[in-house]
Length: 396
Image (cartoon, rainbow, N blue to C red; front, side, top):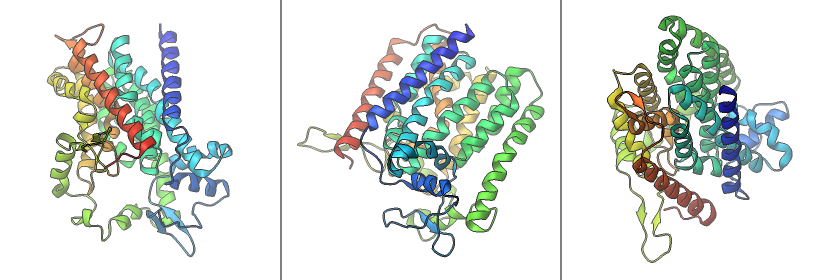
């Protein structure tokens, strides 16, 4: 049985990667920060010697040297793709493959969480084809590619936690994901709780094991900061925020919360009359629940918080993933949907499935027809937006 599940996961991962490659085929990003850094790393240095004007988030880090403000893992993963062509192509391919592969560990995570096979498959379809992960991975620009790398690693961490460990594996997965998206580190306490409850072990022992496993990755990032900025602190993001109108209260502040609440719940698409693509995705974003209607079932899933330890830990993980994002100065633009939600993607999917398929504390074998209709709508919305933006440039 377990062997069959692994093969299903492999098939879903391969299908996801193939679909993302198809959606992005021939449309390579010009924001190839990671591709350029990958080429530099292959040449033996961590800085760039060129600063094209459109790459405006490169920062000076020495005489004639320019460094990325972002963590380095996506650049490292881009290195194997460099033989296929330009740095832009390499980064784009990496993003599409990484994002699509998330389908595999997410399936295993949902099965370990308790979802029956067809319910778990529905969750994978939602995540892969019905969320902004599709557009973000297929487009492949640097800030999207970071999500494409972090999501599959976070799915691995969720899978291992839902099956009760091992702690070192959860810590390594979170540590690697953090080297792509720093906010992912915030889910550590919640996944420790999930692993402790599922494994029947003391919480503090599990948490300490996860943290210890993550220490080497934290040291790698601290060392990378020393190389770039001469300090273990992450000075790059602070420098980017200086003088930016969107960061008038600093890099993080409670004052930014209202703009995120509006972006998550209310931000609409644009209505453009007189053209076939009359509903156009907004450059600033679009409500999470308009982008992915199945996430409305998250609220039903939250009814099990306090009654089911796995649901409680999963909801806490989603909340912790959101906290650093909703206190950030910008809402994630340029984007389709609300891309910061990707830091909570596996937990949102699990909660949505819980809300639909758990009745009286027992899982139904299949998702409801209403939920499947919402899945179909989510696929239509995200495929429409991906094609409209990538192929036709329809982006208001």
